Length: 90
Image 1 (tube, rainbow, N blue to C red):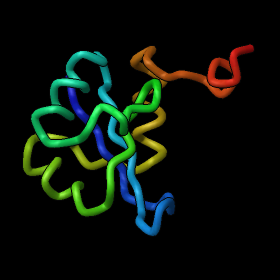
Image 2 (spheres, one colour; image 1 turned 90 degrees about the vertical axis):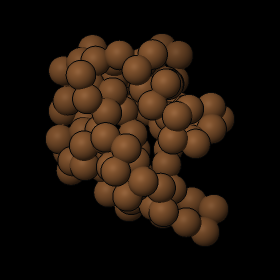
Image 3 (cartoon, rainbow, N blue to C red; image 1 turned 60 degrees about the vertical axis):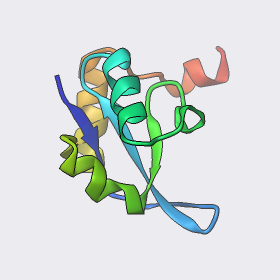
Image 4 (tube, rainbow, N blue to C red; image 1 turned 30 degrees about the vertical axis):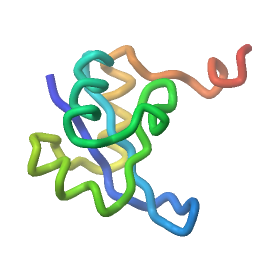
């Protein structure tokens, strides 16, 4: 089981954002987020949006830094990925 975080490259609200996921368990992801000060409102169905300035703290806390491609590949492999179709409710 691992918590994964990619590089911040998505702009919003005047900041750059990264994604944080679990490769196996949403409960593990929620617990890690809570422990490291990531608010519940940052959760978006299968990942947390995390600000760039939180990445070093998350990695120091045990998250594994990966590429965006690897993060998505491992999220899909975990079975936790919410597809675009599912997001649209179709």
